[in-house]
Length: 163
Image (cartoon, rainbow, N blue to C red; front, side):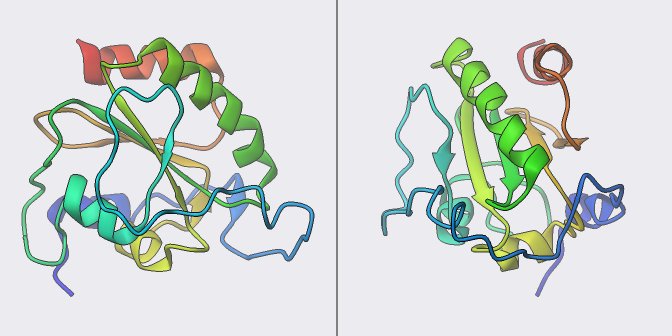
């Protein structure tokens, strides 16, 4: 599999809020909505959209057929890499929902369950979660590792994506 230069850089991120070890918990197993078989991502949503590998390839970057980071979106994006069993991920989720509502129409917000989308987790070298990827319309993505307060995430979004 071809690796993007930016993805190799992200592979070095390894500080942990949650380890990548899955814990079976029946109470949290059904908390993530299932992803439709469509690769079309709806615009102007006020909640993060659950994304699978094919949707990522169709709407973000086709990492399988490109050596360069070539973002396909028409507006900046925020992607939350999480797991349903991860405590810090659960605490980050409502913060990202609030931000998605506040930036509605300006930025696309997505969520990727690393247990369901192990290929994407491997491509990005994700060893700890939560990990938030801020993707500007042009340029390289920026990584925010671990649980962060809303004000810190908002500042990162404003300085990286809104400018």
